Image (cartoon, rainbow, N blue to C red):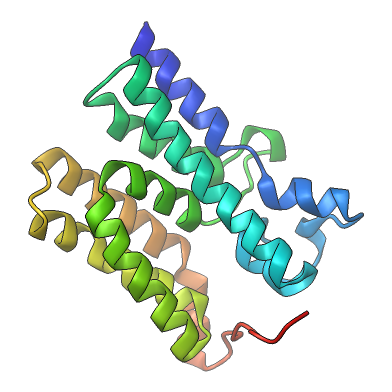
Length: 195
């Protein structure tokens, strides 16, 4: 019963719609502006850099919290299932009729708690790619593709490697429209100017 509670809590944590809630506080339904996605990148573009960073931090925190709560109440290997549940909650949140974000930030938070060394390496890579290209999608796709190999390289268990591979494949699949826009040369770059 305790593992089931851990998984449900992880899903509910992941499904907290940070971007939507912050937007409503500002009088904006984030689902109606920009890319209409509730994730941090759309918040960054439409409501400003500071708010976007805050939403990203909140999404990372809920991914990490889901893993840590599961570890506290159910232990291993339920942390891995909790990480997956948090990502599922973010992508398909019960509060927003199952239409959420793409799972990158919450997945990063889960990775920070589950696999801190691979996460640290990927965080540096993500920041460098965003600063160098201003394509958040490229940074997210590259880091997703590198996650499972890095978990393996850092000596992660086979369970963690399988989780990393599945989570990464899901994130890349959720970016399929971004990949099409990148191929067509129409993907939007992130503006890093102050706002």
